[in-house]
Image (cartoon, rainbow, N blue to C red; front, side):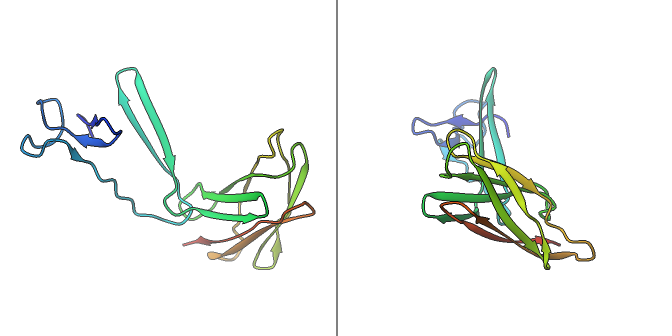
Length: 156
């Protein structure tokens, strides 16, 4: 969409004041309402570009998250049917090996990763199980001071 303006409060709008701005001149400062066809855990990427000025944001309208004690774990859908899942976590002990037990249809998906100096982690997983078109995957932290657990649906 071209001719978008930012209002003084940071609201994205069609100002409609000049021919270069989007919108109807009778509806000055008409806010743009973003609508998404949301799937759980699906990120949406938006960018506002004006010449050399750029602002980008990633939002997940229906996040899949879990928390246990101070640890948080979330998963994002990187492909339409969750063929690839991207996990991020925080609040874990810094510079530590962390393990997760994953399971889909009785098939085990163990994950081992290491946290950074701030206790953050990230890893990817392909949850599909051969012979199945859809299912549920569960990921649970094991062997650390906290054990967040996430469950999500994959497939068509």
